[in-house]
Length: 85
Image (cartoon, rainbow, N blue to C red; front, top):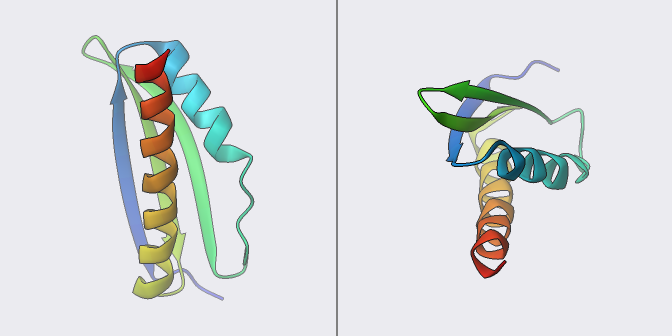
């Protein structure tokens, strides 16, 4: 099946360690339907900022929206944890 929908999220972090923790935390969550969606992660350093790049691919806009919502909710929890500690 072909992925017809895609989305790229670029999340800035002040520290490389934070971006790395976010990547490791998000990447352990399996895609429930791997035939319907795919996610890839990459960390880069641009202009004194570390970015977590998240590329999302899905078979439909609906699947992409659900996938993006889940990742954003997880990112929110990760950032809240950073703020607490």
